[in-house]
Length: 408
Ligand code: ADP
Ligand code: SR1
Ligand code: MG
Image 1 (cartoon, rainbow, N blue to C red):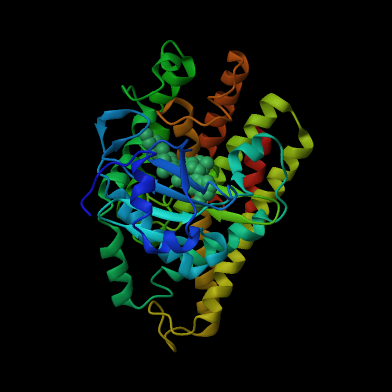
Image 2: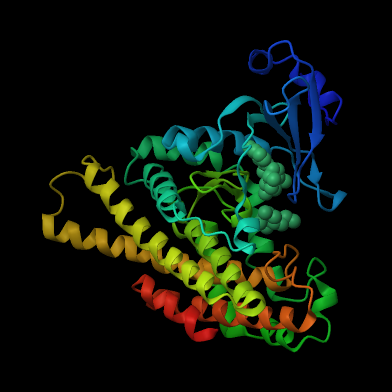
């Protein structure tokens, strides 16, 4: 079938021509509603009229940015990368990725499991829900996906093929280069300019050349380092969760990039949530839980990454007999420490981009009281600056927590 943009009616018609979907629903009549709340695509919930709890999700990319409209063209091939990434990550850890029932690169569509008892994690965290299993789940997801798609675990040939399969995702990588590393730190038409105008903190940020030089250093890593297959946009809006389960959705920004980028994205979003509570709810117990969760995620990530490495004897990177045990042990420790450092640097960029850049987050931009919002912005910029200026000096998760606590 050649590409066409679907709507609530034609999506049902399309799905009725798909064997896997017909097998899932049987002969029942289907109903579609658009439930997308993201920036880029259309997401339909397809359910059975007879048994409404029986449902699937159909997500289609259109050749423009949904949140702006047709005047912002963006190639729909981003769905090709989302499909490939969902498949790849599902193979590595099926517990954390929705099952795909059907996909078509030609139609830029994916049909997947409907996560019926899960919510977007950002909403849960704003409402102060403590997800006690999250650190365990997400540290496993991140360490496994990053380790098993890296040159440590893969053969040189397979790794280069992986790069070939994903690094054509050029438009979304460019979007990140612009919207994470550039435009939010300068005068730009895409920024939240109502807020930027006459704002002393924005002026200070745009003229902070020391900070911006460090941002360039991190942007360069993003543009050139092909360590592992990334989700590419791992914020708390890309996680669907309940007390017992964690699912990572929406990997359309996937590409083979620097190890620290996904870990940094998650760290940034958890710290932005901490800032929200520090300024708005002042719930010290929840803030403490967030800090502990950040620490657990980072420590468990490093530990699990090293464990996968110990299990993987035939590393393409370090062939058997190349180093003695002590040297190899020290090398591995330094290696994960470097990932931690870079994560902190990327987290700083990702926190700061949410302040004046086009894509704000509810925790900060959504704060209604202008004074409190200003406080949240100032705190986010303060922590982000500390992260970006000092990321290469960080050695432990405790040092990261100190930066967060000392700023608030
Ligand atoms: P976008 O690429 O436009 O950001 P997302 O993949 O983030 O789209 O999906 C938008 C919204 O659709 C999510 O925030 C979530 O509410 C809902 N959604 C997406 N995938 C699923 C799913 N598998 N199950 C249930 N809801 C989903
Ligand atoms: C206009 S697109 C803005 C952002 O949404 C996505 O979730 C990415 O974070 C992107 O930068
Ligand atoms: Mg999304």
